[in-house]
Length: 334
Image (cartoon, rainbow, N blue to C red; front, side, top):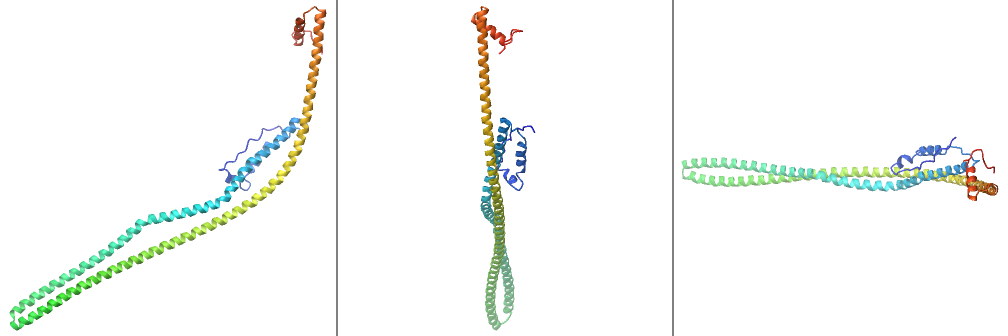
């Protein structure tokens, strides 16, 4: 298989963590890593051996790029239950205060309506009693007037009797008026007490209802907290087990990777030494060839100067032209 390109640097953001660090959530990274190293370099060459070492290093870097943010996410998970409890406590407190604040105008309005109704009932009763008193006084007045007219027709004895009757009648009228006033006051007092009692009973019922609702809300809050704690503990235990398994697996992989890296490092070092030897041999060969060519060129230059009568500069120019192939059918044999 032909060589593939190097694996792109993997990156996991905090927003991706909840969806990635779950059961089989990292499969796509494993697939991506496997695909990136799916090649068979030629181990008989230094380049192939160096390629194998590079691919193994890429896998190690990719593993670290995925594992490190996972460890950070695990730390945040362990702190989450405390944050949830504090936030739920703050939320319920704020809601209770808001509920009471929203309810307050209605409660005050109901209390005011009850007070107005009690005052209205007392006023109506007072007016009724006053009307009865006026009617009784008017009837008594008419009776007195009638008795007075009758008394004028009687003799002196009847006048004295009438005077006594009038005095008694007046006393009775006054006593009756006082009794009506007393009854009216007593009726108003009883009505006011009854209204106050009804208001106290209504307030007690409202308080009991609010208390029952508050107790129910508190029970629900406690149940929610306990449920959240259970779920958080279960999640932490599950995460701890998974983390332990992952650490054990990672340690096994680490030891295997170390052994593999050591083996590959040894092979790479042997390949490097062989390559350095080859390069040195090639450099030595090139240097020997250059020296050989230089000796032949110097010998040709000397012969041109000696036998052709050329100056040293002209001899060098001729040899350079022949070496470059600028003169056809003439070449230097090295």
